[in-house]
Length: 181
Image (cartoon, rainbow, N blue to C red; front, side, top):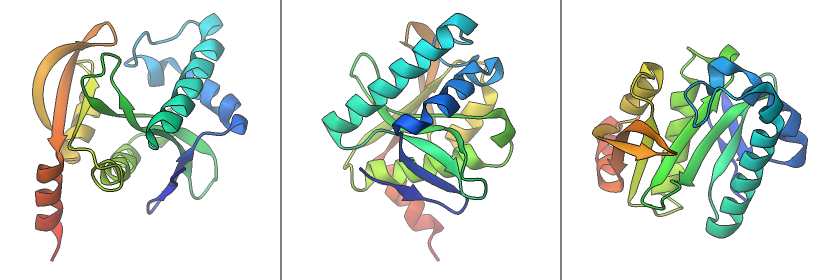
């Protein structure tokens, strides 16, 4: 399975030892309030985390790419999740990310998202990637925009109304070429 490295992060597949840190991520209502079904009731956190980790592992096996554990290079601690996953209805591949509150405001969601998009449009060979969030989640929307994604439409995903941002491989390549000297 693929491991990605950025300036501040290592994105690697989850392993069994990540379960406690992932459950702690899901236990923070500020982190999960914009996730489907969030924030999670205390008695459901462990089960939600276990189901997510199992789905992530199944997706990797089926597709050869998926959601990574996001690890801070300095502390070596797991600070979140980021990666690519099919939306439940199978219509699109979604870029998703959730980072611990202590990681907010440092540009790490954008950094992790950029690495995931690079992998998605590169080795994974995807033609289009979307990101969805609740309309009021402005921080996530800003991350999507910094990644070059453009608002496409309101839609239903995960049983809730979301805004959908999208990016094509061609637009990604064009933006990358414009950034190069």
